[in-house]
Image (cartoon, rainbow, N blue to C red; front, side, top):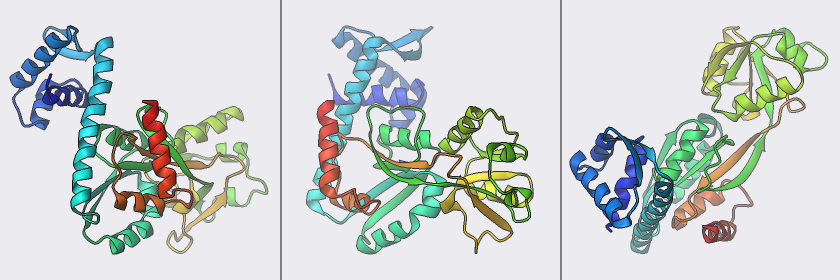
Length: 311
């Protein structure tokens, strides 16, 4: 059994079971990848992948266990490499953050700026995506950690730590009638078209659940993937947008107004996600500690150790 074979298993799954895409990502040939998988299956005595007409269509039940082990092994190897780099230099390297637009645009800028001043030799990479995508980046080893809202997918191999709750507001044109009603209600909001988040965001499914529990089905005029786009169309009079309150700035968002909606809608819960099997370099621990007062280096190490022991 070779480490290379385990890497191939992980990459094939990562590439949606496409051998050619996996071979390209690994800078090798498709026949070479196929041959190594066959050798691994022969050595283990089980089929790792389900096949039809020589095409891989998914994992077998034993293959699911092989994948879990392969991901742990490759992740541990990456952790050893990080440890080697850390021993060579404690304040140099690369930190990859996977995050959503709201975090990158409204929450992280000051934290990032302060970090860069403290660690000028660390290259910081921001990768944006929806909540599911950023967690998948961490799960695949393409990012050190993710910062974003809750996800519908559980991601059992990731350690998730709650960071904060951000209240929601209704945003629309200043002269929109919603800002003159005495009490903000689901009924009052449902009477107007809404600009909603994409369904992959908690800002969509949590808001829609609240409406439906109250017996209303709002009319969605447009779905968007970030707050700035939502505000652009709200400013055109196409509807109201329900956003986190950090996304509205009275001085910047001229022509728009906001009204507190925390009584109607649950807050957006910001979560940190990371791989508990990964060695966390000191400068990454320092960055994470700046996200919340409760995220001390000791708390993070204890949480990582506890999560890793469960595996």
